Length: 515
Image 1 (cartoon, rainbow, N blue to C red):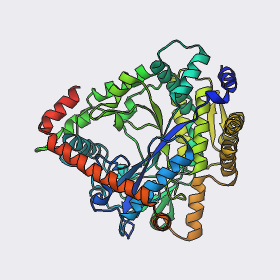
Image 2 (cartoon, rainbow, N blue to C red):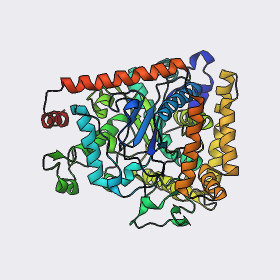
Image 3 (cartoon, rainbow, N blue to C red):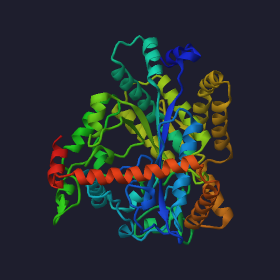
């Protein structure tokens, strides 16, 4: 079956291939000149965090999130991401945009200001959701940053592909089925991304102050995972005991939205004990296992653009899957924009192969094995003796990684042939070289050791170098004017929203939960 789909793809003509559509959502902390998390509000010069299409905040008021538009090439996407970064860097004053996934110096939960979005009901809902994350998991975990890569294929491709496969469904249902086909294989192979792109092997001691852990000393204020690739994705990063009981099913759209919907409507006793209010203040949206869908932490998500006030599940059920969001990427601290060209091109190749390879449904036993493989690479990916379970056997991770890269070569050659270039073979070669010469997590530790600096000071130096570069390069007059206009428009839109809201927030929330 795997050869069948690959063979069918190889038989396509250049005119039947429309390329990829892509975008990035890149997070990063604002940090003061001493390497401490910024206590200042979201800079007014960046516009409204609620309504700006390119610049918002994630969990914290200090945690910026930069969003590219949908682009049809890696170069266009990186250029857009670079422009957004350059505009932000102009308006940070003495503050710095943190270059790493694991945070700067912190001083407990209270040092992490929760993001605010104004007086509108939608703005208040976003703030209460974050308050809920604070009372459920604490704020420390929410100070971590990452990059989310969004990828889709245009309808022109899906129409050709549906015809080639002889499928008779509606295009909406066919696309959803095929995206879940891709997701199942992504789950089988996502450990490779943690090996190739994990870049958070160390953290500032303040992140684990008072917390029991098994890390080793790098220096007096830095801890490291001896063979870890990504502390961000490990037990000290994003995790949730309540969610361990969810068993979210990624086999198809109906099971995915059904299990998520059940979690949103199933109360969790510890959250019931907290309640939804503290006095007159809302402190969480509800007492369910999940307040909303976005609370579920996963390495990949099927996504659909939502209307204002629409829930993600409702959008998926109504209009099907629109794109895939890869959520497991650490920030690349060596890049001024947190991601790099070879990485993005490799992800395109990797995800396309996930679509073209055989992808049976994942049963409970396989699901457990996949989770174990993923966790093993996150915690021990740099251990040369590490083995993973594949096909009922334990195999060295280095052998499995090489085999996966080798299987991508014919696909890279086909795409390069269609584009008359070397882009995908170069991306593959870059990952092979990384495996041989040192994966990013090792490069980070080596750079820290060579500089004689711990995590906070090394990342601060990287961040300041990125800032100098982007400020010196600047923006064209046209691009500068476009960003200035977006700032003004976003502020006006927030003001209009707040002026038009007449429903009390408690009634708005009740209607939202009932919908």
